[in-house]
Amino acid sequence: MGLWVRMGAAVVVVAVGCAGVFGATTTARATPTGGAVCKSFSASGLKLQWSVIGNVTCTQAKPWLVKILADHGAPDAKAVIKNGPKGFHCSATNDSKGRPSAGACYTGTPAFPKNGFQWLG
Image (cartoon, rainbow, N blue to C red):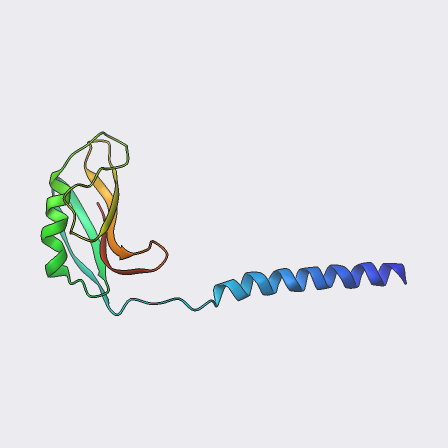
């Protein structure tokens, strides 16, 4: 009987663990109202793949992205973005040449961005 009790307890622990893992994946999240994958382009020697979310369009975001890419910083370091859109949080990582080759600008939080754009070059 002791063996069955221990096995039963193990089954309960596994079931609770699975419910926690799978339950976490079904948590409802606020989704942005729109989004698009934008047409690739080259700037500052980078071929960019980029997209927008929320109410930001590719046409609105491209001038900001070009401005951000024009600034160079320390190689292989966190980029300091000074010229992003007002009201947006921007972060990026510089490549080996000091170009902000991967990053994002968004409103809201990283977990729940509302509007913004992101790039990878």
